[in-house]
Length: 100
Image (cartoon, rainbow, N blue to C red; front, side, top):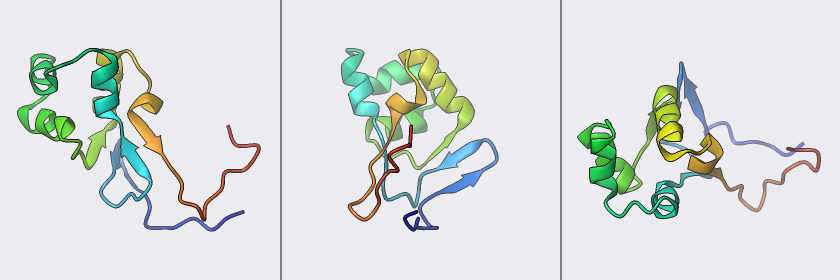
């Protein structure tokens, strides 16, 4: 089994901290484009997200998400968490053939 870097993820109660992740990216721009959302900030604020989070989502600068926020985004965008979060391993990390 390949060695996994221990500083890659930090999980807290009911939230995901993305600050020190090297291979996890959030795909907000892809979702906005797929849903035809031309003004993401306005759309997010009108959908009940706060100004600060809407700005960070628009600029793809989100470093921390609560699970309830992920759920709210999935309901709003009609998607799954896999559509929002992408993990891209570096060249030294390989997936097991039996991995889902």
